[in-house]
Amino acid sequence: MKTEKELKRLNKYLEYTEDLLSDETVRSMTQYHHHREVTTHFHSVYVSYTVFRMCDRLKPKYERQIIRASLLHDFYLYEWYTEKHDEYHIWYHPKQAVKNIEEHFGKMSDMQRNMVMSHMFPACRENPHSIGAWLLTVADKYCATADYTGSSKKFIPVYEEINRRTMT
Image (cartoon, rainbow, N blue to C red; front, top):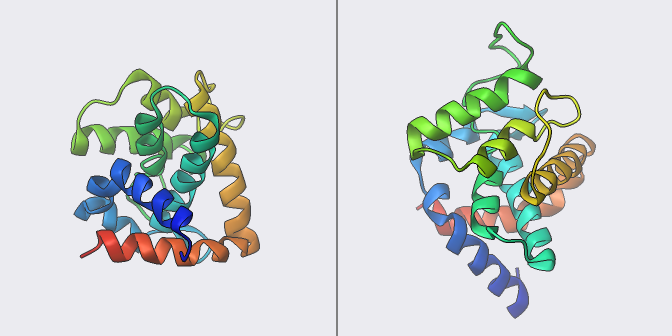
């Protein structure tokens, strides 16, 4: 986080997400494991920052909505390794995330709802219908792979700076 360009990029990301990242319930995602020792909070920030970087290059319409939905895509708020449901986690958690998002933050746009519901494509029951949904799907696969291989550790300095600015 040393260069002027990196700081500008981070400031723009925080313009879109700071209110969400400062939210106590979003911060509670730090207590849930997502991929091994990686928390749901770390993974979600990593994914949304990756989507943000993709949007920075592609300049899609509704960039802010895309990044905010990406941050909340795993807002399911349970320990999936131990808490079981009638459906497999892979199908259940997007529905629970949408429910939690709408209860906590209000109604999502159709695009955002599809982004969250389809982010597990092709393993899920809903297909991506927008550039935002495709960006989230690709970023989620990339970041999940990095989580499992340990290479997501390279994101730790950015994550720590985001936390420093939002978890006060």
